[in-house]
Length: 77
Image 1 (cartoon, rainbow, N blue to C red):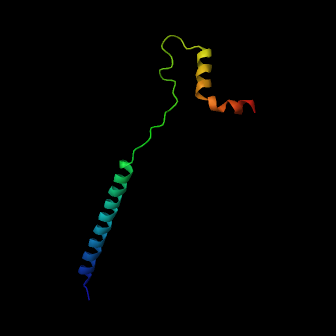
Image 2 (image 1 turned 135 degrees about the vertical axis):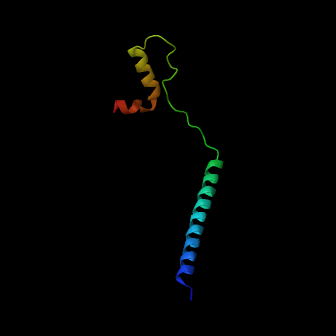
Image 3 (image 1 turned 45 degrees about the vertical axis):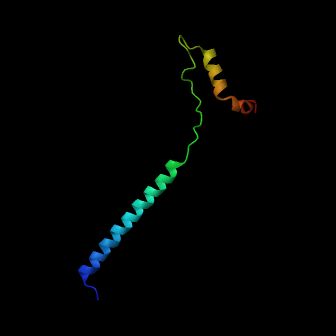
């Protein structure tokens, strides 16, 4: 029968192996995720919309309409 020190040593080794397996699994999953090509979705933005000068209420309304053009039918409801 194994002594207490042998059992403690075996438990430490099992713990170390568990941590190593978790690390390998994490690295493998990270490699799979990062190797896939990601599609870059365009983001609506007002940056660069105004060349310079003062921003008028009319310009703000035009920008809102162009950003939220898919929601026009909801305004009528």
